Image (tube, rainbow over all chains, first blue to last red):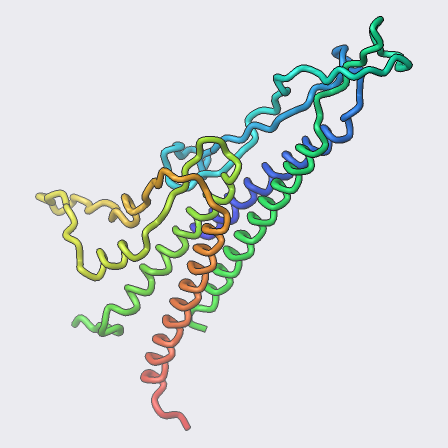
Length: 139
Length: 128
């Protein structure tokens, strides 16, 4: 049904933005992590969004498309070296390689993600209002 | 005897309007869901164009049915009415369009209800 498809598209947007929020939270939480199981400092992560067909077997050439997180990729920039000779992970020159997480950038992304989430909620509400209104036909 | 309960094409038009409105809502939802998708360009269902085309009765191309068993196939509906604008998605613009769309939908439902009320009044006669 048409209206339910709208709600479905909204929910895909909500899921994608929530996942984005999760990754931002992870980045912020690990902004000073210098040790990871892979070795070296934590690497900032990016969420890569891509369109998805609105229905399971429809093609992407359809008019309305959902969104989905296709990949959570690591930032291509290296770490952020900082002089901190007392740190246990400092090299012989006293430099520590901190993660390349910039709290300001993360906070801006956080705001953007939360606004986009709100927008999807509004669309959901509108779609639901339309469906409820349609139920009133002939009453 | 062909007895048409709806003498004008109003109810049919309203029904079409509701279909287009919900289609438009779907496309706006797709645009907003893909706010942050790289290289996504916004799509638009031009409601006015669809309505004008419908009111003017655009000639539709049909396949010739040379046998009684030939089925007419599905009408095109909103096919081809969705435009791919080359612009990126603007949240404010989408929200305004969505609000407008929702109001239009509610207006159509209200009109449809009034129409049905009229018919009901006729059917029930003067009861008081």
